[in-house]
Length: 204
Image 1 (tube, one colour):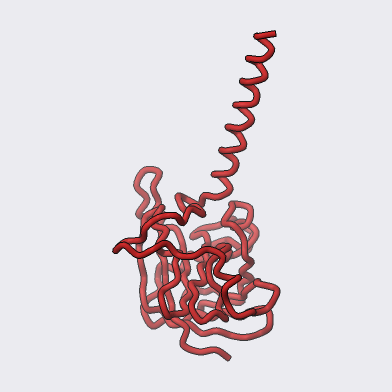
Image 2: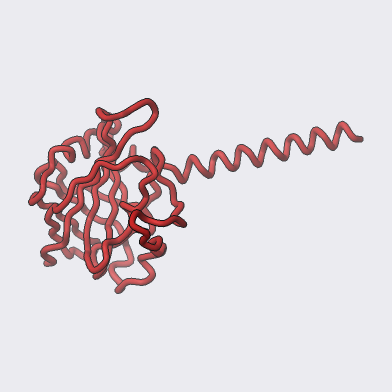
């Protein structure tokens, strides 16, 4: 009887452990997680999650279309999805859930993609030339209703995995952020991220 209980307890612990590992694998993207309960640099309070529910209503379909002339990205379909390997294999990039949408007055539309991606898929080298972008370059987003948003790059950052403040909105501004891994700067298992940020300059 005792041996049976020990075996059952061991099995339960193993199942719970596997479930926990699966949860963190789903949530993580090279060190980025959904965890937002922290203080940003400079003592700023953490950003509020669920940005989409606090904003003016836009199209029910949150799928976006991305064009970045300077990076060779043209009319790429950007769904809203956790940045799992499956999502980043099947799409050029994804908008991270809980981040901003272009029709909001204050937003950080955060889009993540692979540098190299997978051959014969939309992800293949989709964000490879993001590393060449500079201040003044333009980024275009189009929503499902056909409204086009033009952004101008104002900042290029290199951040480490876990610097979650880059997901936060910038007070009083509508911006877009394009994230790609900096594989050439990889040190051991740590791969920095390049984040190109643009501010909204036109809506048509």
